[in-house]
Length: 486
Image 1 (cartoon, rainbow, N blue to C red):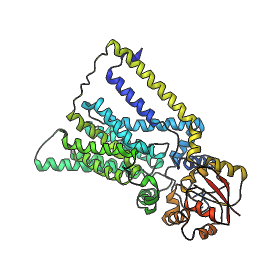
Image 2: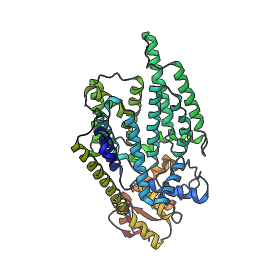
Image 3: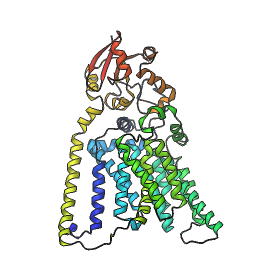
Image 4: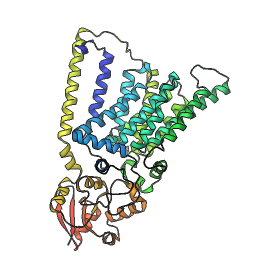
């Protein structure tokens, strides 16, 4: 039996990543998942990438930069092949692979135990952001960029840089996070320049110090990668899109994933511990920290504290740095040795048990998808609308727009959905005024000829509609209410 010959280190490694994969298995709950899926279906049906909004009646025909079109095509393909189960499985693999690359960047002397426990803390710190979403693909590619650049720095072989422009070519069509790859390359170049300048000022020579030639090669690769970003169906618009998103005031104020992590919530406590561990290890650690690592930590640390959606990027950047510093303080004997007779029996039993647990958890998650959908989204209310076909334009909650697109498009175009860039700040502010039933909400619904409203019972609009003589409740349950004009 192969597992009988595994060393303790190998068993630890396998258990670590099987456990991480187990942690990533969860029902699909991202509100944007549904319009991603519908967009992939639309591309397959029309054999074209949309450039204007097809899903809403409020912004129909407005320009839309479908920057995730290739991810959406892949997601719909997976759905056609294996429904939600295959999507859950593949995205769990993507998340696990992201952290595997971070683990492989950790220094050899910290493997497997120090690096493993550091990785586990970093992974738990990012767990609230996991899901079946294109952002996870972007996170994996970011981790791959870091891995290839680290390998180039250690070995100086061009084979680690050559793939970067090709990966960028795919990345720019998968997700607008492609600019992160360019930023990572720029940070590595800046770090090398600082190292080179420092060595020149101190008149010291080190075999590990970067050379001007290696810096120029990286600059050339960065230049080719920038050119590769132009190979996309949106042309130059894709170059501006990331900055338009980052500067949108409405998105920063109203979309939860753009909020800073709330350390008062238990789910973000591991991130606080992770940050404190980095500070403590940085102060006490015996390993010098290179300018590149400092720049990466500062850049992505700021991004992670500003927005919770960037926390995973901060984690994959700093996991190897934290592993190195803790490894310089804590020495754990991890030599490769043949396990004892008892360990030969325990190892395969542990592996079989964790594989069974992973398999059972996967089955449980897939079977529970329908229940999770009903608890998170207005499944029953949408079923009622689909069955009764009430007439008129539909006002919907922002978080439910994507789900309505998946279930009711094209019969019921949405009022709004997660594509905030399509609607713009002005419209989003106007939407929130209606949703909160601020003065003028009735006129806004009249202007858009809204006859149906699907919102949460606790929303301000639901409360106002219940008191209005012009509206009546035609469907209600614990998570949603449907109103119709009398």
